[in-house]
Length: 198
Length: 191
Image (cartoon, rainbow over all chains, first blue to last red):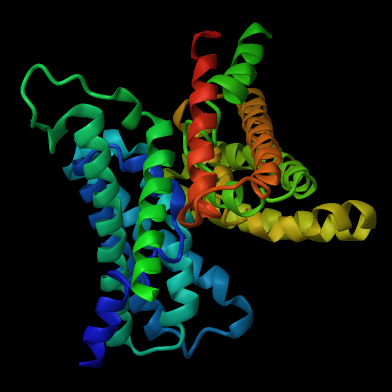
């Protein structure tokens, strides 16, 4: 029961992107199409779950002073694995995500979860925490990607939605669209929060 | 010479690292409330990125390549950068207390700044030589500083603007960044 709570908190209440505002770089960069967002989300979730579990299992033998370098090496190891796997089996995804796969290692969510959760909790709890945060990150990424892809290209996962006469607002899949979409989504969530409170 | 100039101009204006490539968004949103802190952060990043570009290039060329362990690139670079930032912090504290007071608080933040790792990897991917790598590193850092300082100037004024309540803070900052990004797209035909 407790594990379920660790899982669900990452989805909405402590969503890493929309609530904690972590991991902005990759969120903005790869949310230009839904397939990119799902690929990035999956890669990120795998790295987060594995590194959370390993960090949780070594938490008692790592001296406190050097814990951050140790955590970073663990993460960098898993990121390298995912990077090589994607290069070998999904070259098209590798092409479109490019530098943002190795950059998972400096994603603040990873180090944030290691510090705040995995270094203090058991292996199973850390697994569910990582899974919840990873899925929450993927959800946030997909929300942005759906908005941007539908408006900016008129397609979803590459399938056209509106017929041949639709004029896509190209700006939405270009960099400015990322900033504006995220800003509007955050404002919308604030508005909902306000309504709920009053 | 001409190639380097084009590389520098394109890194600062045309392919600005923050508003068109989305690297370093965290400090861009976090340290952009005041112009002075934006300048401090920009200077610290410029200093570290110039050094990191040179050292990561040397590590790749003389350690990773000869031993055929290129797949350790991510691990090697992140360790080099973390160690470099620590080292720079110690040297600056020892030799120039005034510079340390100006940059000190920003230095530790740089380790997790994706610009440094990102540019180090881009330098290798594009096959730059050491001179181009350093030029690319410094130019990208200057582009980061430019975007950060401009953005801080806008945000100082935004504090007094009458924005809708739900847009206050980060949402309006993001929309502003989007408009700035549109402005930077105007440089696209420059080169």
